Image 1: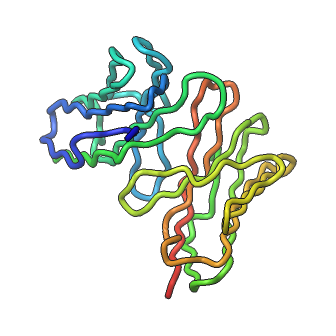
Image 2: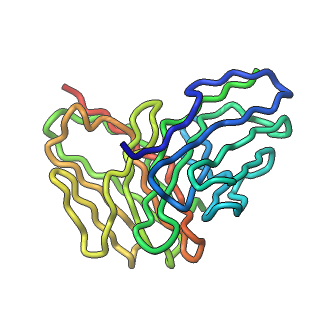
Amino acid sequence: DGGITQSPKYLFRKEGQNVTLSCEQNLNHDAMYWYRQDPGQGLRLIYYSQIVNDFQKGDIAEGYSVSREKKESFPLTVTSAQKNPTAFYLCASSMGTGVPYEQYFGPGTRLTVT
Amino acid sequence: RKEVEQDPGPFNVPEGATVAFNCTYSNSASQSFFWYRQDCRKEPKLLMSVYSSGNEDGRFTAQLNRASQYISLLIRDSKLSDSATYLCVVKRSGSARQLTFGSGTQLTVLP
């Protein structure tokens, strides 16, 4: 079955530690995205990648880093520089060119930093 | 002003009711529009795209009014399983494939 997987589902870290969230897709999509969602708020774009070995900052990239070495994978690192890292992190993918523009989401990772 | 604005609700309606959600967007050059559904503590899932002529999928009808920069979602004959948060989503014009998500409207269908 095609889809997007994210692991782990729940992640707990101490303040000051970097943590990497995994995102893998087998939909053969060129474009991938990372969002964070805070309670009662909409999704905010952190980083996106339209093609392998290329990525751009979204609206709230500070304190985060990504890599896109393979089409299937787009890991997100939450660094110690991110001031409020506790959130629900969602990875998505879509076609890279043309229509449709819909994005499809993985199940998310809930990160708690104390 | 937010790029995409929705009434947060909550909307509490009895089973079988008809309920409508509205959404406004600020960028008149926006191109593509969607409704996503998000269950509690789950990922958003595409409910339907919104076309200029309006479109229907079973009990769900989506409308777009470009002149007023307004999108709506109508749910007829509400089911308990329709309880969720409904996200209005707009593709940003000229911005590759980025989408802007509204904060969502919460719906609870009561037995």
